[in-house]
Length: 363
Ligand SMILES: CSC[C@@H](O)[C@@H](O)C(=O)COP(=O)(O)O
Image (cartoon, rainbow, N blue to C red; front, side, top):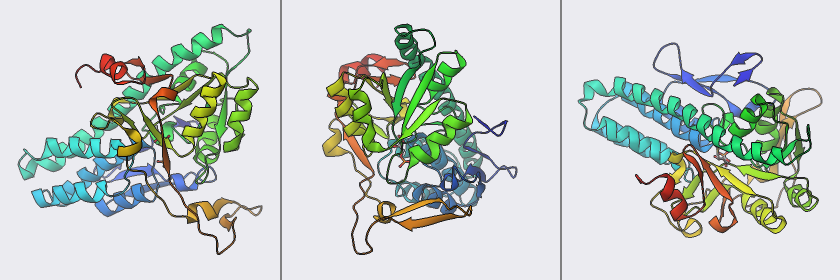
């Protein structure tokens, strides 16, 4: 995607052909900073502390982390240790384990001397594949937007509500939930996006809004609690969100607050779509509520808010009493019964075991 007229992915190989460069998302939208990750520890910290975030990008970054680890030490011990260290960074997004397993399965049978090169090659392939998957999700989601647009007056936009950032910043390029929106813009279909701010870390306000503005997508930032009201008044045509892990029967785990949006959508007859690449499906899990580990992050993310001061400094302020403890479950599970459809690279599936199996009979 373009930033200041230049095309960027969110992660790419450094000029030294060994390290990787990333967009450090902690500083957006106020500063566009690129940092280089040179060691396995750098990569683990970048994932854990959310310099990079979003399920697909977490997976790709971890794949590069394995490649960097293999460049330093390609023994079996180092391979297993890198898998463990990276796997421990964030528990919910299944793309992390998917990418780590793919790398280990490739590397384990190889002689040690061949591992670093093969690892870098596979990490680059996983990154390229992510772009293709998202592009295909975009094409399939575009048809849904096109159909909705056909029922509107000429020039009237399709109003889409999204939660968190399932945009290009959460992937390598295009995004999942945003890919259909970007393709609708390319196809001259009028769209307007309601962007949930997504407390506590404000991925909507800071990242999705920045993406939308950068790509000229008409959008309005709303507080997380406004979505139900807008739906009651007919202001939302559809919801499209991403997911960190979708179960084999279509339960959707995504950023905290997604479930409430799905409930409001159901009550108001608003279609609720989830856009996902197949590496986000956990084929081993059938009950999202019972089986998906929900990341509990620091309460400081709730009590303290980052922003830009009037003098232009990026600073943190406290919004709650010093003595008040805060809980911070980072994800929730939306049961399949609330999901209208799963927009995948192979088409739109019903959110059910049968629906997913029909599109992915090979699984
Ligand atoms: C294509 S991204 C889908 C999800 O990963 C996204 O909606 C989300 O919940 C990201 O959470 P984050 O905690 O910012 O990594």
